[in-house]
Image 1 (cartoon, rainbow, N blue to C red):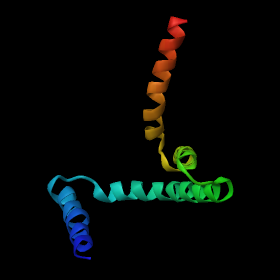
Image 2 (image 1 turned 120 degrees about the vertical axis):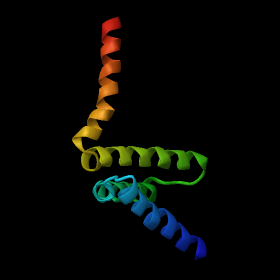
Image 3 (image 1 turned 45 degrees about the vertical axis):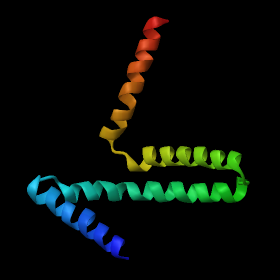
Length: 106
């Protein structure tokens, strides 16, 4: 309990105060953007729980399958719900660059 209280006090309250008032970062805007991502994460977790329930097994192989499935669900839901246009462009720009380099060599 003591560790939890000290982590919340230090990392959440004091550091957010420091970031906001000393460094002058927009902490309210930061947490607003984080909150926009929450539905995508919850959907990915829910989809993975359903996947594991209906398709799952046990052992290292199934752990790997579930991990890959979660990464897929997370990527899809973050792309559709969690990322804004600027963040999507950060993902697409290197892909376009690589695609153009490959096309130029062909």
